[in-house]
Image (tube, rainbow, N blue to C red; front, side, top):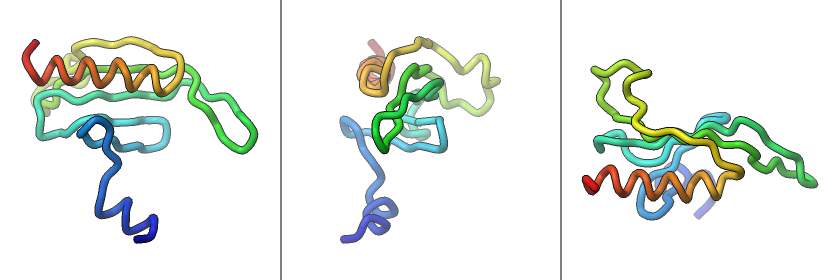
Length: 100
């Protein structure tokens, strides 16, 4: 299986939920659910040939298209690094979708 086949047939998953990236925006979860996480990489730092995420903005949002984009935001925070952002994102999304 080549890389292009894998990315088209099997979306990137994190803890059983889809993870999609568009430029500096990362979406975690499914639009079919009531909530989704939106992350935006606010800064990055070079390390050899790669850019590492610096500050990442994390928002738990409602997916209802009838609600204005400003009113969709339920929670928000900023974290240092993508792994810290994904950690809080997975906790928030799991709790929101389970009704806790």
